[in-house]
Image (cartoon, rainbow, N blue to C red):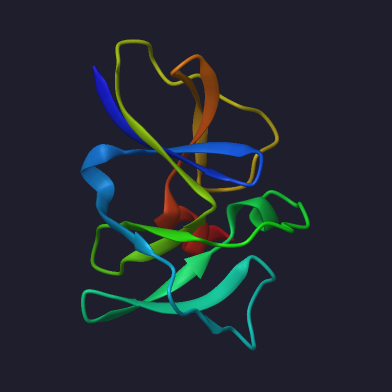
Length: 130
């Protein structure tokens, strides 16, 4: 069984494995990135650390008109903030993650959460492979 945390960025529905979620906070201040790919929104502060903020809509090739209201921060040696417009919920799921074709690195597959299909994200692969 897998346990996941879900959130939205615009109309896209995403999920992270719950054990990779360090925390969630309001996106109070994001310092814009003046270099790097267009999906790197900028940098923010979380629990005394500077974290890069990724816009998953832009990462998937969209224009991302929606604002970043929350940061969902993943764990690891180098935490990553994912911009979210709306927070979802915690789900326990028995079904396996299904593969998704033609997705960039960091999109591990898709799964059904609360009656909606969510894209499962590995933020560290996005930074390494994007």
